[in-house]
Length: 81
Image 1 (cartoon, helix red, strand yellow):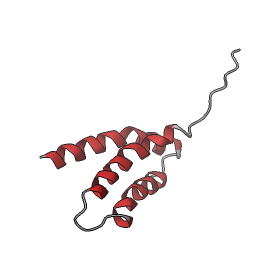
Image 2 (cartoon, rainbow, N blue to C red):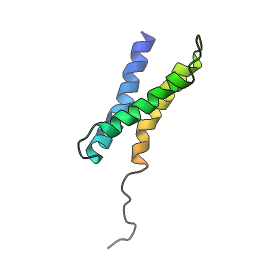
Image 3 (cartoon, helix red, strand yellow):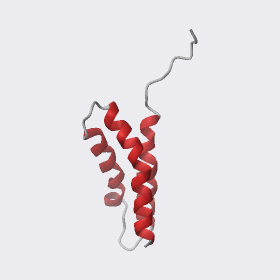
């Protein structure tokens, strides 16, 4: 039950940023695929057998990394006209 709730929250956390990235990329899914794949890379690279830290680290990276697309968005001009 805990895993299902955590997975649902994780999907909800990434939905809006990935949709934003899709729109900013001109309707192509490839930047979203790359970001999603990089988030999953942590499970391949540092997941020792029997360790619980890698799945938790994956969930943290997968929940936070999509929100980085907003850090690199268009900058608004601060000059008021």
